[in-house]
Length: 259
Ligand code: GLP
Image (cartoon, rainbow, N blue to C red; front, side, top):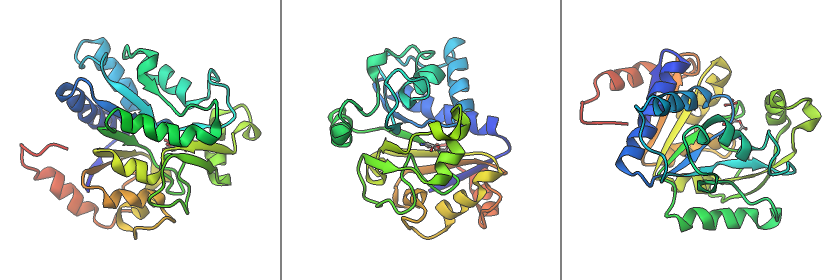
């Protein structure tokens, strides 16, 4: 695992956009897994800025899979993650809606297994962008989630519902359940890129990166992945004991070694 500590959320966005773009340039038909939430916002805006100023690659042949989706919101609900990702990124990158996939909520009982088949059917995810919850959750895999779990229904913790209340008119509107890629599903992506910014994420990042591998911190599962990178700003990095070493590694990285 590589940990890169950067001076600001904008620098995190720049490096994250570089990584995603380099994969799309190498594989114009890349399968890209995307996260929602506030953290990826600057990265998405940077990808759009470059695309619209003709600096970015062509995304026409890319396929996108979102990490998770709320249960109980209509497909066209503005707060659904499917609508959110279209509004915040894929529409502006010119991706056709049928290339942007989320769990099919028409039958919640089947949504998990169908989503797994869909991901496998396209050959798996090339790069998965991830955020992290303040309780260490990944996608909507709350503490206690099996490290081998596949896409399924999860019940949100009160902490996650509180954190996400800012996106809704009132806290009662936050759904109680979600269909989420499992920790095992996420592990199958060929590359993981976890981004975190702000002091509120410092504890979760320290636990995920330097704590024990445990379902009590679902994000710690990235320790098992052969190609995982964590991009953090200095605030989110502030709980890391080996921060000096990570900075030294990044500063002395050979030119030929990309993220
Ligand atoms: C939600 C999403 C996660 C995201 C997390 C953190 O719970 N399901 O994928 O990583 O929020 O969100 P934020 O980036 O807004 O802190």
